[in-house]
Length: 221
Image 1: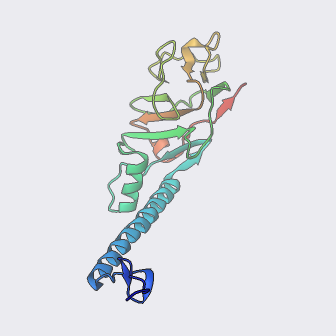
Image 2: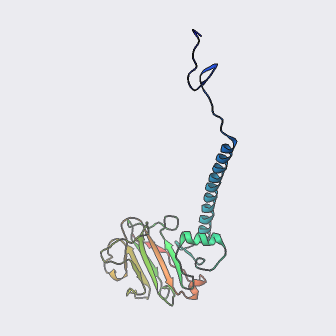
Image 3: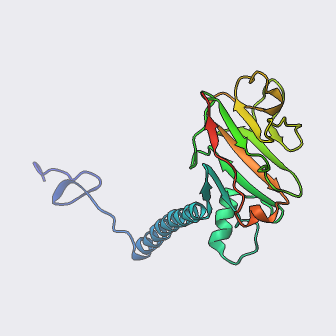
């Protein structure tokens, strides 16, 4: 009729300019709710699982003199939380009877180490790691990769011709610059933060029962 507005496309007669809402079928809404529920539940389950695993890692880590160690991973167990925690922390590990490990300077705990300082690891006479195999201390940066150094030395241990002090004790010098007069006992540190890994292969009973523990590191400058 003359003077009467013509409804626009997509509008309902009598409600000019208002879009027609298409009602979703019930099955569609059910599917969306199920999908959102599954995704949301999966995210929550994943977060809770990670929290549980990390809590287990922290529980297994036994701090001693600034080192973090454990004697759980590598043993047979039906505890899936322990197995997951070991896979998270030490994905490839021997049984404690084969090797025991300690670490220091990791971003997630322990003592913070930096090449801005010089350090000495002092083993009293007769207190080097008691092993039937061998022991070593390995150096990495905080990304857990080895860094080139001037003497191509990335670990030091009982096969490194260490020089003992007059009283039979042994000092290992951990620093970026070469320690004058102590080159044989020097483990070069990379620039910035770094991590130490102490490994004892075929450890004797003193290590297995915790009677022997690694000494604290000493900052000397």
